[in-house]
Length: 189
Image 1: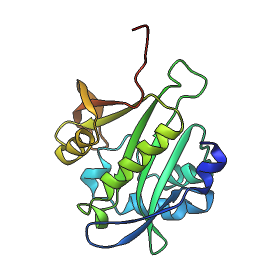
Image 2 (image 1 turned 45 degrees about the vertical axis):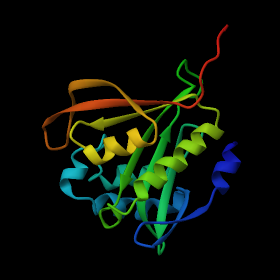
Image 3 (image 1 turned 180 degrees about the horizontal axis):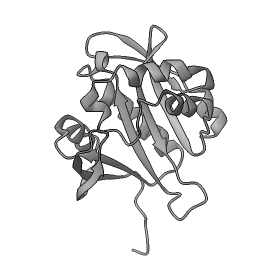
Image 4 (image 1 turned 90 degrees about the horizontal axis):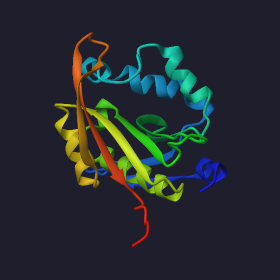
């Protein structure tokens, strides 16, 4: 799958409540919509994200500086609003070019409607089409819904790092690291 194919990706999915949501790549014109998604999150969700999403300029810059070869951002839209974001962080030109990290954020209005699982499945299908071999996810310990979703998608928990993450709430959190092997390496057999 080329960057051009990524740009043109579109898919309509139905959530558990019957809402029709459009999955598509983030584009530069989406800055304000992406800011709105992150601003609407409950404070305890924001505290567990890797970046300080209260900084509107930072969030808007993610849309302005889209580079699908490094980070592929897949958004879910409902009535033109961005209601969820899944990103595939790649490592081109490095010894980790075969591995990507996935991050998913579901807006408060869409939580519990199965959209996170749909987005995870879609981003994994894209990772496979891109030829990636492994996908990693870092999940704060105690985020049982997220942990179960990754496990159901085939991820295995490989490690737990104690006090690895210091949230925006200034509290240290343990982080579970999950891996999914998309392609096995076949050596001499």
